[in-house]
Amino acid sequence: MDLSFLPKLPLELSQPVLFGALLVLGLVCGEAIRRYAALPRITGYVLAGVALGPQGSGLLGADVLGATRLLVDLSIGLIVFELGFRLDFEWLQRNKWLFVTAIAESVFCFWAIFAALTYFEFRPLLAASAAAIGTATSPPVVMLVAHELRAEGQVTERMLLFTAVNSVFAYVVLTLLLPFLHLEHEAGWQEAVLHPIYVLAGSALAGFVACMVMLGLAGWVGKREDRQFVLLVAVVVLTVGVAHSMNLSVMVTLVVLGMLARNLDWQHALLPLRFGHGGQLFFVILFVLTGASLEFEAFGTAAAAVAAFIVVRFLGKAAAILLFGYPSGVRAGGAGLLAIALLPMSGLAVVMVRDTATLYPGFGKELAAVVLSAVAVLELVGPLATQFALKRAGEAHPESSGA
Image (cartoon, rainbow, N blue to C red):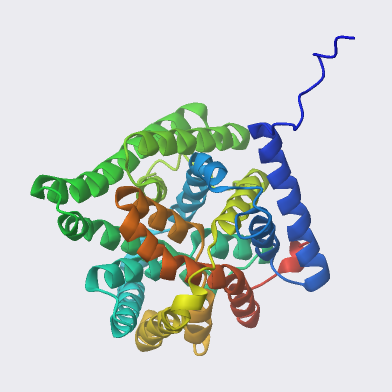
């Protein structure tokens, strides 16, 4: 009997099967965590990823995680575009102390982490690179928690603003460290100088061009929510693809696109941005994959340095917000809650570490030892901190969302 029509064993899982399984498992774990433990759904998504990844069952190996990089970039791109779209330049012009506070939060955090790691005898370039990455708050975490809680108010808006600023700050500083990294590995001075210029200038230019295309098409298709939703997703996906193909920064390109789309739309061609339920799909897949990418090996050898990294990171952010919060209009008690809300680290930090490791694997491995261990802690603790801060600030309204 010819049974060649039957599938061969063991079954080979195709990409659609893998993608669907990740979504289902992430959704189930997220909803279970929310219903039975009253924790953010993000925690469930991350735990699902840990269970599937190399630290758990190993079903998602390093080769599979590497193949999903474009999907991670797409997810982060959509999220940071929405974050950039929230930045209102007129607001910053009216309240200049607000921008000063956002920059100070990034600077204080950077130097606090750098000082702590040099105390633990990390060489300066490694400490500076880790400090740059550690400056960034996770855009996906704060945005998803804010969405779940239907949070609105002073702490929420400043949390999102500071996250956008410190994410850009982190990537710019990390890029500016590239010349020293190239020279440490005996690259030519042309590469050391031209590489960071290309990445930053090219990313900004790509974001500007994408913005002009988006605004032009938005005016042409009209103010129909369904058409503009397709347009927004299409332009973001296209821009992610272009940035990926040209070795530019997806994060910087999409933040620039979002900021300019909000602030150069003088004809008000764009409707208020709402990715809605479609955006949730990318949240789930991003956090499952991020959870699968977490590493815990360094806890045994660098536990003290990782603990110091986490503590001084919070203290640096808190010191700046407490110092500059009053002149920027942060109400009494709001400064501390804002510092707590900015705790999360997540997929963006993982991507920055992976990008560095792509250039120089040895340096990337050293960087991952401390940064990804801190991410492993803050990926789980961070969403709880943000949820606590927004609820404590009285800005959470989860009953209106059915969450």
